[in-house]
Image (cartoon, rainbow, N blue to C red; front, side):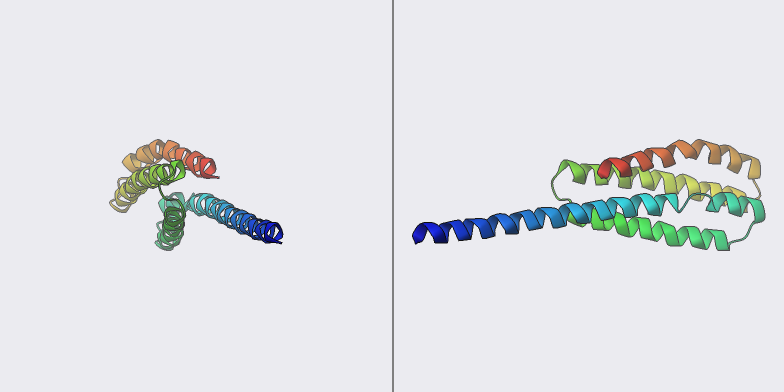
Amino acid sequence: MFGALVTVWYTWRIQATLGRLIDRNFAALEIARGLELALVNQKGFVSYYFMDGDERWLKKLGKHRRVFEQKIEAARSLEKNTALARLVDEIEAQYASYVHLKDRIIRLYRAGEKTEGRRLHEQVRPYFFKILLLCRAYT
């Protein structure tokens, strides 16, 4: 009788542990997909602004930036003291540099310094692809 109770208890514990692992891995996958999508959705808005000067493009960019930042926070809350937490830190640091450069480009375009803005715009592309690779590594 005692052996049967131990077996039932042990089975229940294994199921609970596996359930938590699956839930956590599924959540991490959803966050990773959301990070990647939020980053990709930012692409093009500064170029569109360069072409027609319509500030609505920058508002849309801001919306997608906020989504990316929310996904970073979700990843940070999920990953604690792991190699993935360090990866989230790296994504966040690279993204901060990327946003800083993009904001500088926007300021140049607003000031009418389109040649300098376009030059810097070409230099920021590798940041985007590096962040994209980091987001894919998070999966």
